[in-house]
Length: 109
Image 1: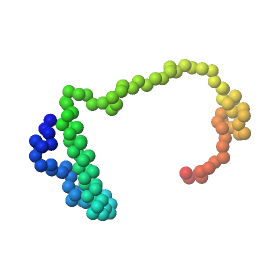
Image 2: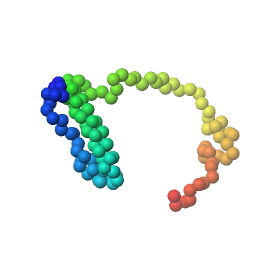
Image 3: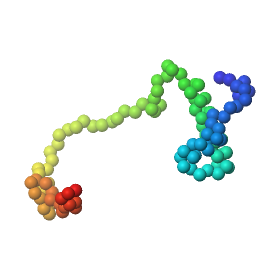
Image 4: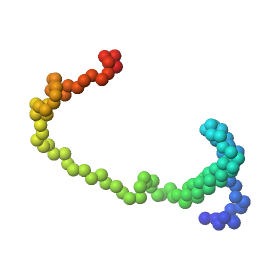
């Protein structure tokens, strides 16, 4: 990897004018000071991304996480449960083996 002095003059990855253009497209009203600040910050970000891209090797597989994750679940086991009649026994109202609740939406909904 080249040292900064060997690369030649630093060319910004994004210019202040490009930041101003993106701000206009995004309908953001930025002051001159904000444009300068964001241009510098975005240039730093894009420079670091370029450095990372240089290091990335084609033989290294892409990963979402450096730590492999395994989903731990228990097996489904059928267990006894309530019958419909038992479940509805304490309901204030029931119809056709279902809880009966007040209608909240009109017929056309």
